Length: 367
Image 1: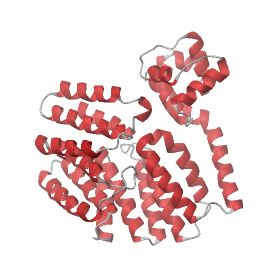
Image 2 (image 1 turned 45 degrees about the horizontal axis):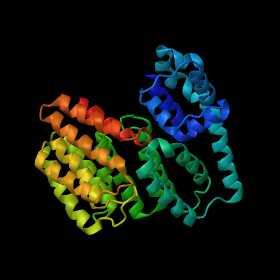
Image 3 (image 1 turned 30 degrees about the vertical axis):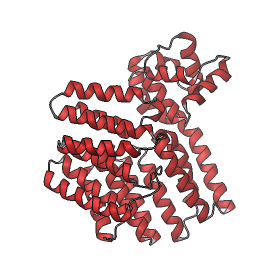
């Protein structure tokens, strides 16, 4: 692991933005670092030495030797980082949970408002920016699970939390998706039961991870209801991506056609929420699906339609579309060109906007 990656991971573990890390160093050491300088650190554009390494060591609470020694950096995150920051995080979360129990906690209406806010924030911030905050909300809401409506809210929060882990992690993401489905069942809310399973299926299928689990959760959603809904739409495209990755072109195309029919009945007008699937986002799903199937003309058409309506406030999704183009190049035989396009697209996106899913797409292109 290079030092830039370690700085980024430690910053994310603290729940800090790049600007916050700069502020912490400036306050503690009298420097005048900017957010842009932190970004250059994380991207390996500048090299940290001497004074600045010591400043990072003190602010990020990591031994200086770890920052200085490449061998120690490789082992640090798995062997040390969790225990280095866990006591502070655990203390904060436990206090919030008990305080919520003693005070009664937020109302069901307040939880719905929180969910709406997180749905919007996830689209622009990505996983690292909200993981710790959502974990705190889960600690609070688990103290209130005495009515079905709160089980529904908890299930949707759990689904969002699962998305902050890479789907390729056979433990964390899948475990949370499965618990979210079980929590949704406790709500007796048919829409929540279908949505949670469908959202998990499209997340795993799009990432190309745990495809068996994606299929199981999608099939459960389909068995629960055939009424057109966003949950059902997500489930269909989760299965479509799984089929494409297995090389089952016929099934993938049948599911794509079915998904477009469901979208006609249930598509969203809301543009910038993780709980919504507007026209541009449907075409992001389809762009990657068709790129995986090698249908360059249809994939390019889906990309153009997505870009035509993609909100400017969501640059991460424009990067998704660029990576889809890189995948098409690689699949056509120009692997070097595909990797170059993907690298350029990631470099053009500010590091704090990067997501686990984008990094997994880059890995798929390289493979």
